[in-house]
Length: 200
Image 1 (cartoon, one colour):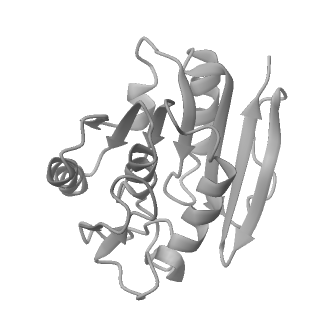
Image 2: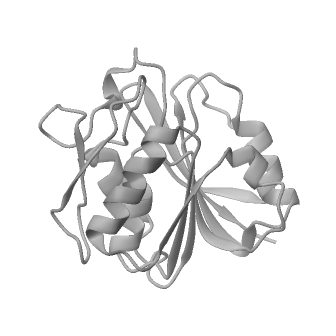
């Protein structure tokens, strides 16, 4: 995701570099994908990603996944590798979007759809419900509340959807709807990440 450059956690993997992301598991396990070097680009670290996908292990196979604010695509590609039926990735930055397209083509991914668009504008469209949603917006841009409201009110979420949110550590209380129940949460460095289950 595009984050402020001051966050030292923007690198991915164990090598301390931000030039690539690594797919941890699934059909593309071990594949490294280049990342566009946009200012503030901070891919989700391998440590966080592994934790999140351990949480989501029963939910990803055959799921429809929506990766908002996709950035490096680390979450979306990981979900696709682990057996998601379909992954829709959204990215506004043109260069980052182009890199996502190239990476999907290099993987010959048949379950990934990528859109060059603003996530909030996209969420105003006619919705198809998703089973898993990844939300990792730019830090300190006040995008979370609007994003969560549009997801809930515009019909983007399946009945028991799982919603992953990655945010700056100081946002300890997130503006989630009352019927989203916190499933798991953790803090790593300056990042807090939480997984919610939607219940009706």
